[in-house]
Amino acid sequence: MSAIGSVPHAHVGRPVRPGRFPARGGRRIRRRVLAGLVAVAVVISGCGGVPAGRPAAEESPTGTGAAQPSFREPRQLVSANKVLKVRLVVEMRTVELAGQRLRALTYNGDYMPPTIRLSPGDRLDLALVNKLPEKTNLHTHGWHVSPQGNSDNIYLHIHPGETYRYSYRLPKDLAPGTYWYHSHAHPISEPQVFAGLSGAIVIDGLEKYLPAGLRHVTQRLLALKDFQARNGAIPTAGIDSNAPTTRTVNGLVDPAIAIRPGETQLWRLANIGADIAYKVQLQGTRFNVIAQDANPVSTVWSADTLVMPPGSRFDVLVQGPPAGRSLLRTLPYTTGPAGDDYPETTLATLLSTGRPMPQATLPTTFAPFDDLRADRVDRRRTITFSENSASTEFYIDNKLFAPDRIDVRARLNTTEEWTVRNLADEEHTFHIHVNDFQVMSVNGRTYNARSWQDTVQLPVHGEVVIRMRFRDFLGKYPFHCHILNHEDKGMMANIEVVP
Picture: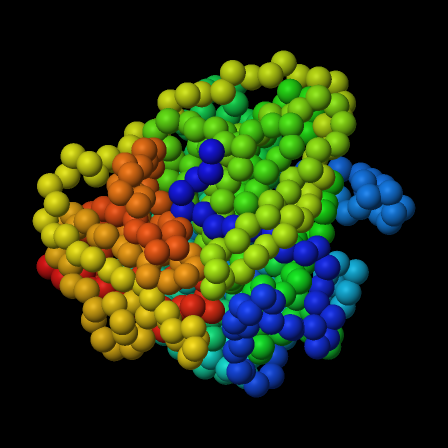
């Protein structure tokens, strides 16, 4: 079973050599003409600490004799007394990636920046210092917070040399799970995120829905991030998402993850890349999904593979297979005749070792679910995604994005049903800010939703029907394709929620 709202995955586990950007099979190559490489470094203040598992280095399972990196997580910045103060400095840095020294965009000087960890009801005060030669900004992907002022306002431009102070007040009922943060500076979100400007956010609280015996299991963040290398840098111009690409977990190539036979762990899987999809599989075990896009599920569901388009997240329980090695892989995936073909790639190696543990009984029911099937639908709309392959322009309702234009007006305290159609010869990834949605059907077939979500994959020449309730926040915010190349080239629109 694959999850709806994910995308293909798998890119070659080797960097691109300079000049290797041929068109493949007549597919168009998506190019961005941006001068120069910009990067970001971050100096962060706040609570830290990373309780990440760090097994000893192992010999490479490929038999090459090269040392295999140990799994590790980025450090965490954790709220105290319901407040977290963070300072992020954005600048160009040289980082070590897959044995190479590359210029990249960084937060805190790191390609894999700190994880921001909070609880519902907390306040995050975040100062973003821009040391780039171009504008940037910050988006807290998936948060149900105000889109106005100095909260999750993606229309802000923080210019070179400027510092901007964001302040986010998290609702007390903000759903626990895995979120992320990244640049949303239009029309350069793709090169900025592709070159490194993305990191993870964890909102605590999923544990309260677990049986008592599973509330203290080992938790691991697996942030899926991909890069290419050209002339000593991650490129920010001429990006081809179909070219050979190195896939990483927390910035590591094929790290060794430790588990005991029978042990249950909670994994936070997050695709925090710009364009590329993953179709993840863990040999010898299944993913037991307890949250999708930071929405706890009503019924725990199990899958051999999870399709993860850019922006998607799954919180899952995994159980250690019999002693030995097994691979976490991204399987071959195609996004359609006009899209990309991703090959199979190993993401990480699971080392099942040590004294076996009794295998825990996993929960079947989990968290309350606000099922929108029972809501009265106040308005129905049809939204169309399309593209012009000759000009590499991407449209919503036949229009290119205009930041000052309001494309949809919705009223507070209403429920709407949208039929989102894809007229293109490739998949697109629908995403909306502020208010998550419930998938009702895919290509006319009823979808068994166990939770809301904030990303969903649109089938080639197909449609997805969703419902949303506009329950509190007023203001303007976008919906768009989360393949950031498409967003930058026009596939974004504005919705305004009014009283």
